[in-house]
Length: 144
Image (cartoon, rainbow, N blue to C red; front, side, top):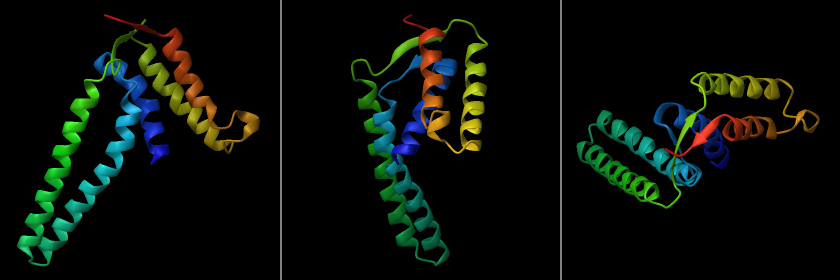
């Protein structure tokens, strides 16, 4: 769960700036809470389908309503996290090509590190984070 959250914040740090002109440092906290909740929603959907296939309409309806409650809680949590001070900052790339180049570079770094076995000799797990940090430091202007 932590690895999925960290991977998603690594990519969303770049794509959030590119598509929404926002940098959202609170996204890691949100992902850590929302990924398990999303799993519950998916499992509830599968349970609803299975109940429906079995002809158990009441069970299907119960599963649908339970997942609706979880989705409502997720929506509420996202809205509250978005209100945190410093939870998001306006940001833009210095040049329009930086976002796509950074994403392509991130993919290349991850494929290369995977191919090399993520060994300590080649930087271990740090190269993707280093690339994103460099892009954030040198390629992004924060503020309106």
